[in-house]
Length: 115
Length: 113
Image (cartoon, each protein chain N blue to C red):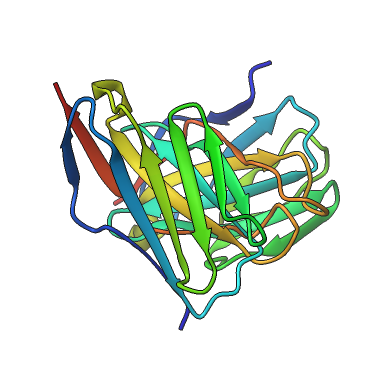
């Protein structure tokens, strides 16, 4: 199993550009989520999904869109990049978003810089 | 407001000693708490999970305690090794569902030979 994969590893955008961060998992996990990690701020939840076709907002959703058309994929779209979105983005998955808690598996991260 | 606090200062200890990391929280009633390890440039890796009705969990050299009265979890690494050097994150979950984890900022641990 590849686990959770993310592409690209690094990206530089200009203010106002849009892009999609890709996330895929091959563990048949129901639950997937996106976090951003900034120095001194810890991991903050952007959006999450408890299954295909179901998404919801986390703590910091503004400026980001998600969709979940398959169990495997959970892309994160930046609609109009801003310097405040410069961060490291992590995708995570776990076996279920309901019932007993499960550990989350994280991807390697995408380091995004917006100039 | 809700807050999760971990030792803000880096923890430096000597190889072979026990490292103890603290996670305090306020204005939460978590159903469970998880600990993760994060190495530079990598995603967090799950270590241990403890539920609100459990006092202590162990896994090899790791031990975590959960005191809902003190609103505190302690994470211990016994017989620490230089390979244990990393940042350790605690995360709180509200309910018995796997999502919506709230993470602390992490504590950096350095184990020197």
